[in-house]
Length: 210
Image (cartoon, one colour):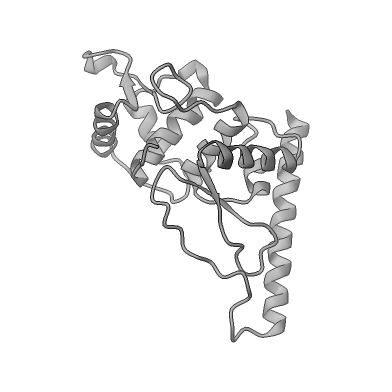
């Protein structure tokens, strides 16, 4: 299974995202890819890369046959597309739902099923969180390509992370930290519940708008 650095994850994630959400402008020029990598929305961490840095990452990915320049040796007309998955050049093949989840995890890191559903409408419409759960389970069984992480203190749902990079995720405690008062723990739990409710409402709004 391909192992990607943080910047390689960002470039591949952006190429997948734009291929699905804005196919009319895909493959991407270097400038468009830089802008995609540096977006302030739906990115974690937010980066500030320049063209030289992104070109360096592209060169590495091209050498690994994970990206290609559709213009060949014509640098002025260079446009880039990924060969990471769902192509005749590799063995990785994902369903639309699985691809949306992998893309989102590459761009934002570990997330809960509810968060994934609320953030993927432009890539794939999940009717409910159970469909996200089904895709996550499929990705675990097929690879595994994702891993379920220990539940964070005060959180109701566990997060999932992809396994295409550094898989040494921090081992988060499943209990509330010692030393916190009962009131603080209750507030943290309530905040977590509200965050999950906001994610569900955002997904519902996106579904209605669609």
